[in-house]
Length: 138
Image (cartoon, rainbow, N blue to C red; front, side, top):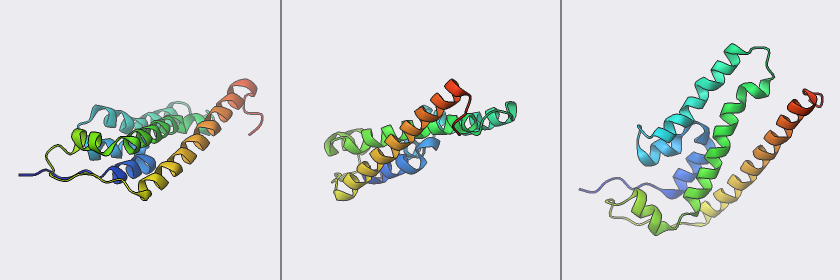
């Protein structure tokens, strides 16, 4: 009996779009993945920050989700750049099929780099503004 085949492109896509909530981890490793649950915990942590510090800047309220999203982008790159044979050995040992990366994965990884770099630089700039000037520039 063969198991389901996990698609590397789809896993990278999930990590890019829903990486802050750990969707890619649940797709690859199942619903009890501890790191996936940590990603998912960023949502209630953001709610706690919103509830316990309503006077805080909006950026601090979404910061747990932003950090989890950046980590999700890094995981998308790790998944997408893994060689097909190593990906299959880790996630498709009994599927009977092999993965074949295509240009769609390459395009997805370029988009992931653009998103991760933009969000990372914007996060560092906003944190520097809030810590250094108290938010004087925005």
